[in-house]
Image 1 (tube, rainbow over the protein chains, first blue to last red):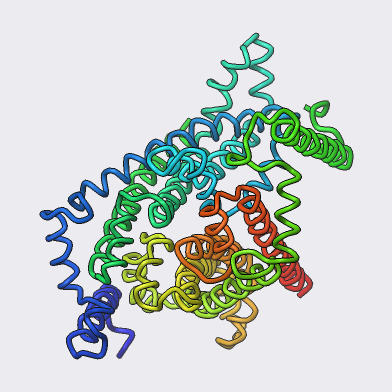
Image 2: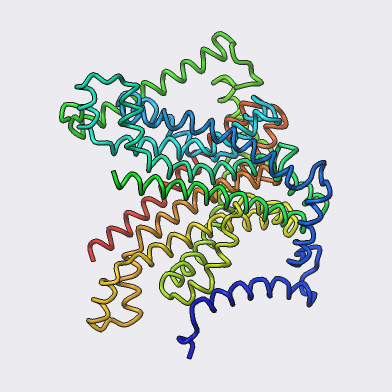
Length: 257
Length: 266
């Protein structure tokens, strides 16, 4: 009997049960609206925040300011991490010098950099960028390094025999060879960097979508907190989907060649 | 090609020597830049002497509500509770999702809906619900550690080659034996990958949660030191966090080699 139910019906019932339970416990009164607002109230809050400023700005303006900050830290992490990782894969001495430093850096949770970031670069633009950087840096470097290690030594030697400069080898042999690994790293970086920014905004920064959550928490308005969580999740999802698309395009092109 | 790659033992000692040289150079440079020439002021980065003095202070007198041992124990305890609860629920759930298509269809959409929300984004809600004490930290660690353990167990079980399962079925293995002797051993490496990611996420989340607000713990030390502009104590807390993360990761890795070796013997 149970085996005859088609799979999609299981999926639909899962979603319905989730939202039904959520709405149900609030409607019946088991859980107070001040603890868990109903889904309807969250949607209502979302629409309100889109049209009326909260903590100084509209919801999408907060989100955009977070996204802008994220982008600068993320680009910086990629711009330093990828070349460094490639060079470490190419030159053994550099690998041996950086690896012990990198290994010790890796065990420091990214958010533990918040105090130094704030003291060194302030809580406006510089500090958050540094925190995103510390979150996003490791996967960029590790994946570029692994990718470079996978490049066939014969290709590099062939390029050398033909008199290619180190820069040309990096651009025309190492980079294309390790591209799939690099793009995979960029996707992991994006998730970690985005999450680090939210953490930074919760702790020291007084703007952005994380700040909306802090304000919602202080005003005891869980519907604001949940609305901001959803926006954060949606932006994270969008970043992931875009990078996944790039990833599959790169790897399919790479396999063909 | 062979000239570039010396024997393994040889490479090991060389890498080690360069590593020691790098760290020594850095420590000397650190001392020169702070105490030696005074290029970097105390309010930017502490000198080695200040670092050691702060370490001694928190070790004997305590700082931000407790000695170093007490702070480390508090953070370790929260990570342990959150992590073990999460994997106790997450691994079986991921297993069921990989084992039975209907359970997968039932749970996966809701899971996909909640997954993009980063664990750190749960902190304010946890505070609204449970306050600033231990319970809210355990909740966010649970959320952080839950997701990787579910996903990796699920992937590990789902990717078991069908002919393995069929071969066992043909020989009349019972359901329980199938789980114990086919599914679990085969998915073990992926499950451990998930546990490692879960552990990492637990530490990141705990530090963030304690920075947002706590009464005790390494994140609390970090936050207090930041307020006091005590850079030496900030560094002490960061080093303590790194060591705690390192030691727990190593413990998990040791457990993994044990379990996987046991699997290979069988």
